[in-house]
Amino acid sequence: MAVDKTIVAKIARLARINVPDERLEPLAAELNGILNWIAELDELKTDHVAPLASVTDHALPMRDDVVTDGNCLDDILSNVPESASGFFVVPKVVE
Amino acid sequence: MSDLLDLNAVEARKALIKKSISAVELTTAYLGAAEATAGLNNYVNLTAEHALSMAAESDKRINEGAPGLLEGLPIGVKDLFCTKGVTSTACSNILRGFVPPYESTVTSNLWNAGGVMLGKLNCDEFAMGSGNETSVYGPAINPWQGSDKVDLVPGGSSGGSASAVAARSALMATGTDTGGSIRQPAAFCGVVGLKPTYGRCSRWGIVAFASSLDQAGPFTRNVADNALMMSAMASYDLKDSTSTKIPLQDLMGALDRGVKGLKIGVPREYVMDGMDNEVVNLWEQGQAWLREAGAELVDVSLPHTKYALPAYYIIAPAEASSNLARYDGVRYGTRVDADTLDGMYEATRAAGFGDEVQRRIMIGTYVLSAGYYDAYYLKAQKVRRLIKDDFDTVYQTVDAILTPATPSAAFPVGRKIDDPVTNFLNDVFTVPANLAGLPGIVVPGGLTSNGLPLGLQVLGRPFDEAGLYRVAAVLEDAAGFTFKAARIAGGGS
Image (cartoon, rainbow over all chains, first blue to last red; front, top):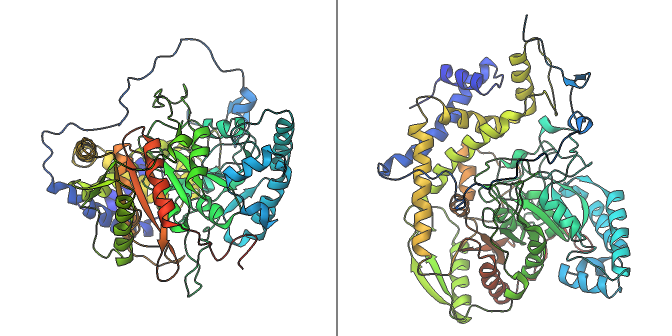
């Protein structure tokens, strides 16, 4: 399951990371190195093993359905790169 | 000044309460130590004024006869923890200048217990690394040196934390451990580091790397100090849904209980090609120490050990790619402008993340993508189950497990490596505990012939941190590790 330049470009696009063309080839080599090593897992038969997503045994706790936080616009905007009238500003997305 | 730095945390606490020293004096000594060892680059932000005002408050509480558990003790904080009003960057360009309007639960607990924050400590970018070399602030340096005097890495990702405690520029420090990021640097720097059971310390307010593996823990000079700090760090937290309600044991009370009658497993799979002989010798020495102290050593098997590392390098990047999706240049952190929204995301993330972080996000994105999810991510989750089952089986017969901490001692800063997998191998003995959610502690055991520290690791049953401290205290006692690093404050060069 080797990755090539095209696949790396697709992954970069999915990950929203701008990767310059000249980096695609070296990145493909690095990722293949890691993926080939990971392929060691194929030795193991796991057909009847249930996947484990978390080691936490307890059920997700339920919280009271009440407001515990809020009214902190200044805190939320305190690190914003660009804001206007209490909103986050991004490049235009709707014509 | 060096007299104050000689006190460990338990001793300093006694001296503070007796008022033979003041918290302001102690904090001043540590701030001086941090400046004197600035060349180690283990602090990324020394908050001297803040520290002195916290110390003054501590002195007030001591005078009022109401000291907290960590009253007046100077603590360094890994830059992965959000600290209110103090820049918190995960040592990444993408969070440069980020000042959280909130405090992480773990650090809140420390300050509520009277701890004094000295500043923020260097680490690998987003905790991704094993040498503290991926930090945007440059590498932290290990205060230990071999006979060739070459600069060595302190380990990673919590390299600044281990370096500062070893160099005596912090009495204690916080770290986080996703695949060994507390235990491996503790081993490299000759200090004590604990990764608690998953769920023991709240993850709230800690910059997330791989949420099902991340766990915060303490770095200290010795085992008793570690139990003291851990007693204050852990808490049940409504804000972390994986936080446990199982009560914390009496950790300080566990220290002198000894290991008589305990069964300690020695896993035959914890060896690898190219492992230093000195590491094997120390491991055997550790077994002998425990046997002499009355423990029964039992040969055990954890057959899936060698699959832990490849499984980890699917699961951790997968979770990271999802967690790091939030860094988009919109709400906080670095932004690189572009004409379109997607263009802005792509430019921001390319400029904000370093090479290692980008590589792991890409791996994570790939293994979660349509067509590959079953082959990689689901497969890794199944292997994770097998690894946890291995431990569950062994813990039916033994109380704890003794292993080497790392396959080698600290390596030189800037070591050139073509294959990223070589760096991953540092974590071969530490990663299984993260996948299984188990607690693990590293204690310095001895020095290599080149004069560098090596550590022993004890793994325990879930939520049995007290059991770990029992074994660790016996190992510490037997090892009698009193060596000091070459570049420490108040001594050395």
